Length: 292
Length: 265
Image (cartoon, rainbow over all chains, first blue to last red; front, side, top):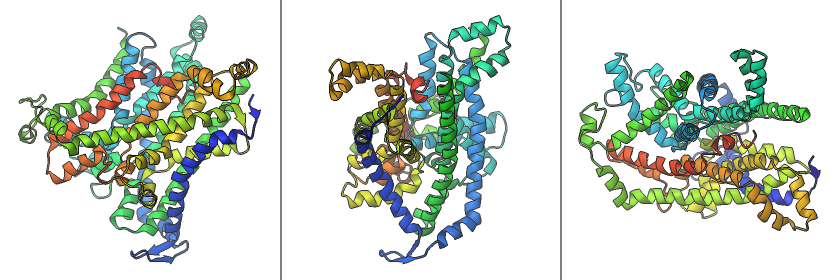
């Protein structure tokens, strides 16, 4: 049991100061912009909530938000089951375990702009391995700079390539924590593979899977660099996800007010969904503590 | 060999294909790349790597990146250690809210903060320094470090602390001499994660630097746009950015799965 101790605040203070410096001041700047209009030269005019209304009603924002949810939804339903399947098939001990883990983690250690550039080179229609194979070996007409479907398939594949390993590693960590005795008991009871998965493995993976889904949700919802380098949001606006659109407005058109309002709405949505996950996770923690 | 091991093997091949293509491209001449498709480099050349290792504007990109990443890792781990201890051992006013607030910063889209960060770090006179990037990356690395360390510390029984106090250890003495060695795997994993997330993040790093602390990504973007299509050079630079990650991951290979689970298994 934890003890009550208000002096613990002193331990937390350095973290609090550093994060507050990086989080609160920029956040206040954004809030400041979101209620004003600027024409440059540091001239600002009070606008109230106009920008928020405008953004919430604008079709452009709805489209970007729709694309963002579609993207996050698609990568979650691909990466989570795939990650679990791979973790289940992985060896539990021996020489190959660290080899698998290191090779699988490799994509996550590559800088995000390099990931985008790498996939760009990989997908070039005539000289990239993927593009060449699809166009000239399989005879599928594939060019992600022209065809929105091809662009979507490419960014989804890229994200699956980049992040499925996170789900694999988390599920794997859950799986190896299951004592051998559980499996032996299941074997004696004559349990099928499916019931072993459903009643032993899945419950043990529940916590780590919640973390995996939470992390994948947050990161895919904030994704910017990789699709920006890969497709630049195109062709047209077909792969313009929320943050790409945001940067277009803020730095491309220098509309600081609308961009700031959009940032706050964007952040609020991320926060709301993540909070739901977090409370879910804490409830799970309480349940498991009760079982002990 | 078991039949089911085919799944991880196919998956790893899928992971290696784009990486192979990048590496293969880096050993080709520009002419060969533009001439058409070839699975292996026909005329093997290390010209691109020679350029990178002899041109200061290239190799300083790597040095700058490594400097701010290391600085960030040290800062993040040092301040996260006491905080994680407090969260794992004590209840205090607002602890749950504070923990969640820390996590929310992990959720903030970097794109949202790019411009305000530029203004903030210009205002305090840190623009274009390694420290600026290291501090900015604390925004998402400190919450992560606290989260992982708290998970590892939660696995250490409280009796350890109590016994040490009974034996007459002072708190700092106990923390450094007994507690830290107990969770050293956790500290290693945390440092690895800080390194990793600071290494892969480049939007803020690019925003906060101009010349003196410019990360490798900025150099790469410049090449991509200005020098036409020097794909070989770009591929070589990309290949080299994979190396530091591959080296650090080797050291934590046995703890990596537990680390990704935030120490919570």
